[in-house]
Length: 218
Image 1 (cartoon, rainbow, N blue to C red):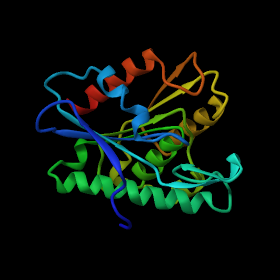
Image 2 (image 1 turned 30 degrees about the vertical axis):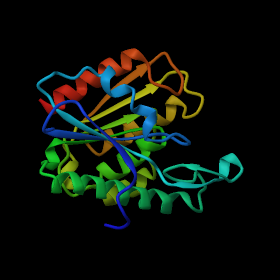
Image 3 (image 1 turned 180 degrees about the vertical axis):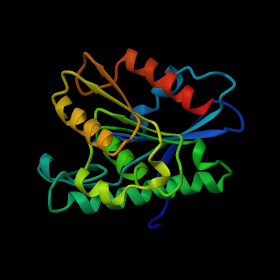
Protein backbone atom coordinates (compact mmCIF):
# COMPACT_ATOMS: atom_id res chain seq x y z
CA UNK A 1 0.00 0.00 0.00
CA UNK A 2 1.41 3.40 -0.85
CA UNK A 3 0.59 7.04 -0.41
CA UNK A 4 -1.60 8.97 1.99
CA UNK A 5 -5.37 8.65 2.14
CA UNK A 6 -6.95 10.69 -0.64
CA UNK A 7 -8.92 13.79 0.23
CA UNK A 8 -12.56 12.81 0.26
CA UNK A 9 -16.11 13.54 1.36
CA UNK A 10 -17.99 11.27 3.74
CA UNK A 11 -21.78 11.03 3.93
CA UNK A 12 -23.62 8.65 6.24
CA UNK A 13 -27.24 7.63 5.73
CA UNK A 14 -27.66 6.64 9.38
CA UNK A 15 -25.91 6.17 12.69
CA UNK A 16 -23.22 3.52 13.02
CA UNK A 17 -22.91 2.53 9.33
CA UNK A 18 -22.77 -1.21 8.70
CA UNK A 19 -21.51 -0.86 5.12
CA UNK A 20 -19.60 1.55 2.91
CA UNK A 21 -19.62 2.57 -0.73
CA UNK A 22 -16.50 4.14 -2.21
CA UNK A 23 -17.68 6.09 -5.27
CA UNK A 24 -15.20 7.47 -7.81
CA UNK A 25 -15.96 10.44 -10.06
CA UNK A 26 -15.10 10.98 -13.72
CA UNK A 27 -12.46 13.08 -15.49
CA UNK A 28 -12.30 16.72 -14.44
CA UNK A 29 -14.90 16.36 -11.67
CA UNK A 30 -14.33 15.73 -7.96
CA UNK A 31 -15.97 13.93 -5.07
CA UNK A 32 -18.77 16.49 -4.95
CA UNK A 33 -20.00 15.30 -8.36
CA UNK A 34 -21.98 12.37 -6.95
CA UNK A 35 -22.76 13.95 -3.57
CA UNK A 36 -26.34 14.88 -4.67
CA UNK A 37 -26.98 11.26 -5.76
CA UNK A 38 -26.75 9.85 -2.24
CA UNK A 39 -30.11 11.17 -0.93
CA UNK A 40 -31.77 10.37 -4.28
CA UNK A 41 -30.96 6.68 -3.74
CA UNK A 42 -33.50 6.62 -0.90
CA UNK A 43 -31.94 3.58 0.73
CA UNK A 44 -33.98 1.81 3.44
CA UNK A 45 -33.95 3.55 6.81
CA UNK A 46 -32.64 0.39 8.43
CA UNK A 47 -29.59 0.37 6.17
CA UNK A 48 -26.92 2.78 7.41
CA UNK A 49 -24.25 3.26 4.74
CA UNK A 50 -21.12 5.40 4.71
CA UNK A 51 -20.51 6.91 1.26
CA UNK A 52 -16.89 7.87 0.62
CA UNK A 53 -16.39 10.21 -2.33
CA UNK A 54 -12.66 10.71 -2.95
CA UNK A 55 -11.11 13.48 -5.02
CA UNK A 56 -8.69 12.24 -7.69
CA UNK A 57 -5.27 13.90 -7.70
CA UNK A 58 -4.63 16.71 -10.15
CA UNK A 59 -2.47 15.77 -13.14
CA UNK A 60 -1.78 16.94 -16.68
CA UNK A 61 -4.26 15.44 -19.13
CA UNK A 62 -2.97 14.97 -22.64
CA UNK A 63 -6.36 14.98 -24.41
CA UNK A 64 -7.07 18.38 -22.82
CA UNK A 65 -3.83 19.92 -24.11
CA UNK A 66 -1.94 19.15 -20.93
CA UNK A 67 -4.23 21.17 -18.68
CA UNK A 68 -4.06 20.05 -15.05
CA UNK A 69 -7.29 18.72 -13.63
CA UNK A 70 -8.53 16.02 -11.33
CA UNK A 71 -8.06 12.70 -13.11
CA UNK A 72 -7.52 9.12 -12.06
CA UNK A 73 -5.16 8.70 -15.02
CA UNK A 74 -3.89 10.41 -18.15
CA UNK A 75 -5.39 8.76 -21.21
CA UNK A 76 -1.95 8.59 -22.79
CA UNK A 77 -0.63 5.10 -23.66
CA UNK A 78 2.83 5.89 -22.30
CA UNK A 79 1.54 7.05 -18.90
CA UNK A 80 -2.00 5.72 -18.46
CA UNK A 81 -1.16 2.25 -17.16
CA UNK A 82 1.16 3.58 -14.44
CA UNK A 83 -1.45 6.15 -13.37
CA UNK A 84 -4.15 3.46 -13.20
CA UNK A 85 -1.97 1.23 -11.01
CA UNK A 86 -1.22 4.17 -8.71
CA UNK A 87 -4.89 5.12 -8.44
CA UNK A 88 -5.85 1.51 -7.72
CA UNK A 89 -3.40 1.45 -4.80
CA UNK A 90 -4.93 4.66 -3.45
CA UNK A 91 -8.41 3.12 -3.58
CA UNK A 92 -7.13 -0.06 -1.92
CA UNK A 93 -5.91 2.17 0.91
CA UNK A 94 -9.46 3.50 1.33
CA UNK A 95 -10.81 -0.06 1.41
CA UNK A 96 -8.27 -1.08 4.03
CA UNK A 97 -9.13 1.96 6.13
CA UNK A 98 -12.80 0.93 6.22
CA UNK A 99 -11.75 -2.53 7.41
CA UNK A 100 -9.63 -0.89 10.12
CA UNK A 101 -12.73 1.08 11.12
CA UNK A 102 -14.52 -2.20 11.78
CA UNK A 103 -16.32 -3.11 8.55
CA UNK A 104 -15.98 -6.49 6.88
CA UNK A 105 -14.72 -6.38 3.30
CA UNK A 106 -17.98 -8.17 2.40
CA UNK A 107 -19.77 -4.95 3.39
CA UNK A 108 -17.78 -2.77 1.00
CA UNK A 109 -18.80 -1.74 -2.51
CA UNK A 110 -16.62 -0.03 -5.09
CA UNK A 111 -18.45 2.28 -7.49
CA UNK A 112 -17.25 4.54 -10.27
CA UNK A 113 -18.37 6.61 -13.23
CA UNK A 114 -16.35 6.88 -16.47
CA UNK A 115 -12.68 7.08 -15.42
CA UNK A 116 -13.79 6.27 -11.90
CA UNK A 117 -15.46 3.11 -13.20
CA UNK A 118 -12.20 2.02 -14.81
CA UNK A 119 -10.47 2.34 -11.44
CA UNK A 120 -13.33 0.60 -9.59
CA UNK A 121 -13.01 -2.40 -11.92
CA UNK A 122 -9.22 -2.32 -11.92
CA UNK A 123 -9.12 -2.33 -8.13
CA UNK A 124 -12.05 -4.56 -7.26
CA UNK A 125 -11.22 -7.37 -9.67
CA UNK A 126 -7.71 -7.64 -8.20
CA UNK A 127 -8.43 -6.95 -4.53
CA UNK A 128 -7.41 -9.80 -2.23
CA UNK A 129 -10.43 -9.62 0.06
CA UNK A 130 -14.03 -10.43 -1.02
CA UNK A 131 -16.19 -7.37 -1.69
CA UNK A 132 -19.98 -6.93 -1.63
CA UNK A 133 -20.03 -5.68 -5.21
CA UNK A 134 -18.63 -3.46 -7.95
CA UNK A 135 -20.70 -0.74 -9.64
CA UNK A 136 -19.30 0.37 -13.02
CA UNK A 137 -21.14 3.23 -14.76
CA UNK A 138 -20.52 4.48 -18.32
CA UNK A 139 -17.08 2.93 -18.37
CA UNK A 140 -14.80 0.27 -19.82
CA UNK A 141 -12.24 -2.31 -18.79
CA UNK A 142 -8.56 -1.42 -18.85
CA UNK A 143 -6.16 -4.01 -20.29
CA UNK A 144 -8.49 -7.02 -20.21
CA UNK A 145 -5.72 -9.30 -21.50
CA UNK A 146 -3.69 -8.66 -18.35
CA UNK A 147 -6.73 -9.17 -16.12
CA UNK A 148 -6.74 -12.89 -16.95
CA UNK A 149 -3.36 -13.15 -15.16
CA UNK A 150 -4.05 -10.70 -12.34
CA UNK A 151 -7.62 -11.21 -11.11
CA UNK A 152 -8.18 -12.29 -7.52
CA UNK A 153 -9.94 -15.55 -6.73
CA UNK A 154 -11.48 -13.76 -3.73
CA UNK A 155 -13.63 -11.62 -6.01
CA UNK A 156 -14.50 -14.05 -8.80
CA UNK A 157 -18.03 -14.36 -7.39
CA UNK A 158 -18.46 -10.66 -6.59
CA UNK A 159 -21.59 -9.26 -8.27
CA UNK A 160 -20.97 -6.49 -10.80
CA UNK A 161 -23.52 -3.95 -12.02
CA UNK A 162 -22.64 -2.23 -15.29
CA UNK A 163 -24.74 0.56 -16.81
CA UNK A 164 -24.26 2.61 -19.96
CA UNK A 165 -25.98 5.23 -22.09
CA UNK A 166 -27.05 4.15 -25.58
CA UNK A 167 -26.04 7.56 -26.93
CA UNK A 168 -22.84 8.08 -24.96
CA UNK A 169 -20.52 10.25 -27.11
CA UNK A 170 -17.56 10.05 -24.70
CA UNK A 171 -17.30 6.30 -24.09
CA UNK A 172 -19.34 4.55 -26.73
CA UNK A 173 -21.58 1.78 -25.49
CA UNK A 174 -19.64 -0.73 -27.61
CA UNK A 175 -16.72 -0.34 -25.17
CA UNK A 176 -18.98 -1.11 -22.24
CA UNK A 177 -20.43 -4.14 -24.02
CA UNK A 178 -16.92 -5.34 -24.83
CA UNK A 179 -15.95 -5.05 -21.15
CA UNK A 180 -19.06 -6.99 -20.15
CA UNK A 181 -18.23 -9.78 -22.59
CA UNK A 182 -14.64 -10.02 -21.38
CA UNK A 183 -15.91 -10.32 -17.80
CA UNK A 184 -18.37 -13.02 -18.86
CA UNK A 185 -15.47 -14.96 -20.38
CA UNK A 186 -13.83 -15.03 -16.95
CA UNK A 187 -17.12 -16.17 -15.37
CA UNK A 188 -17.91 -12.95 -13.51
CA UNK A 189 -21.54 -12.28 -12.57
CA UNK A 190 -22.48 -9.10 -14.43
CA UNK A 191 -25.87 -7.40 -14.43
CA UNK A 192 -26.14 -5.10 -17.44
CA UNK A 193 -28.36 -2.01 -17.75
CA UNK A 194 -28.62 0.45 -20.64
CA UNK A 195 -30.52 3.71 -20.93
CA UNK A 196 -31.56 6.24 -23.56
CA UNK A 197 -29.01 8.83 -22.42
CA UNK A 198 -25.53 10.16 -23.11
CA UNK A 199 -22.52 10.28 -20.77
CA UNK A 200 -24.53 10.96 -17.65
CA UNK A 201 -26.77 9.45 -15.00
CA UNK A 202 -30.57 9.36 -15.39
CA UNK A 203 -33.42 8.89 -12.86
CA UNK A 204 -34.17 5.32 -13.92
CA UNK A 205 -30.50 4.44 -13.48
CA UNK A 206 -30.51 5.93 -9.96
CA UNK A 207 -33.54 3.78 -9.11
CA UNK A 208 -31.81 0.67 -10.49
CA UNK A 209 -28.63 1.47 -8.55
CA UNK A 210 -30.68 1.89 -5.37
CA UNK A 211 -32.29 -1.53 -5.81
CA UNK A 212 -28.93 -3.14 -6.58
CA UNK A 213 -27.17 -1.56 -3.58
CA UNK A 214 -30.03 -2.57 -1.31
CA UNK A 215 -29.90 -6.15 -2.57
CA UNK A 216 -26.17 -6.32 -1.96
CA UNK A 217 -26.19 -4.82 1.54
CA UNK A 218 -29.34 -6.19 3.18
